[in-house]
Figure: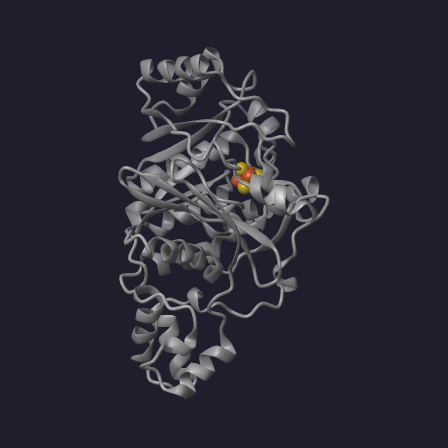
Length: 381
Ligand code: SF4
């Protein structure tokens, strides 16, 4: 897509945020003074840093092995590096920045982690067990400025973007906990707290590190990124031509209803979103997943299912129906089982590919942002 058109589209998110957020996000200039995480680096970037600091480039491969194969927790343990280099790494980078504050385990094996960051903020990361493997749901921001009305993660607005390394470290931490069981993280979903496309560069760097064959080596087709609909970033992402799975949180089949649930729809109208999605499927040849949270009396009738079918007809897609968990801070009530099945049946009848997301971790604080909201009231007010 043309750069001029893209930058015009980009401006709209900031206008919207000023409009909906009483507590605006820190700008890039006000970035907190954090020590850079060593996990932010791709091997080639680490080689450049080493060369610029008078070290041999081949050390990058050794460091990567310590980080992602042996998964050490201190620079001191990197025993085949000269002491001088270990000291330099210690001075310039952080290795372990996430402190586990809470680890909640569900009967179905789902584990929810509450991690504390270098500057004291808290984030959530979730490990989900599936028949096909272990999937980690990562967070990309402390809080979120998008303001979806059904979401606890947005309470209190956006505090700051995560560094790429802080996103990578979430996966490493979960992998370290699986090491004791001899298991591996096989899938990643970027659907935790935050809007990944609002922290685009860090998210892209994260993808390159976890996908790298010298890093965690998690296949692109095993990674899914989901957006609430930041249209210019969808064009940008399509142009990256990656094999990463792509999902859009849709939640309503018309402008009026979507705008009520998701203020982002005021900045990027539904028809613009659908145009961007069509561009994505055409450019990449890949299908898109539409995430659709069902809320009783809001968006769960058979008529709405008919409207949704008409909206996405002809798009190479799949619909993921998500019975929305009750969030105490919001008014939405869970859709009944019979209504969920009626909604699914209507989509199927219209030839739409659809699944109902299996509920996981229902006996713990399962909804995104719930655990953080409960434990860190001061951050989420
Ligand atoms: S659903 Fe996602 S984009 Fe919307 S407020 Fe929550 S974290 Fe942000």
